[in-house]
Length: 239
Image (cartoon, rainbow, N blue to C red):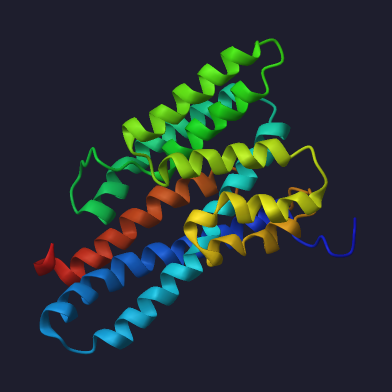
């Protein structure tokens, strides 16, 4: 192992989860407060600064998850099983996602991140189909891109393309992770672009996953629901 490659897959997952939790906790706990203080014209600056910091710290989550999705694509024993896992947790996560971000149990205009990861994963599968002719691949990739727009999945077309970019550079040298991350997440700003740091430092090893492989799937809908319940208890009158 090269000296500078210090992060295992498990470490990257924990970094992404922490970043995601900070981001979503900021939305759940500070957005209602911001709305109240904007209305009352009191103390907005302090809350807004903390809100901006929380959202910025949350920008590492999606780039890392996209990178790990591509890593998993090339190393999984069953891509079909992976697709089913993404489908199942996309459906499980939708109600908690809608409750937290839309304050309703069903909102058709915005779908959770698992749908984006699913479509990106299918895009990788199309891209690396050895027996498909080029125009079939192009049609398949365009159809999946259209699906991201049609269902309005989180991060939308930009998120889908970011996954494909990682898929393209995956067989290349590690240094290409840097420009790939910066190009793929330019739309998210420089905080997201700096996610190349942990991604570059990934050493290619899974790490010790004692919590079980489904913990990181379950955490997503579970933390969304818990944060919604806390937010509802604190700001019931504003929903």
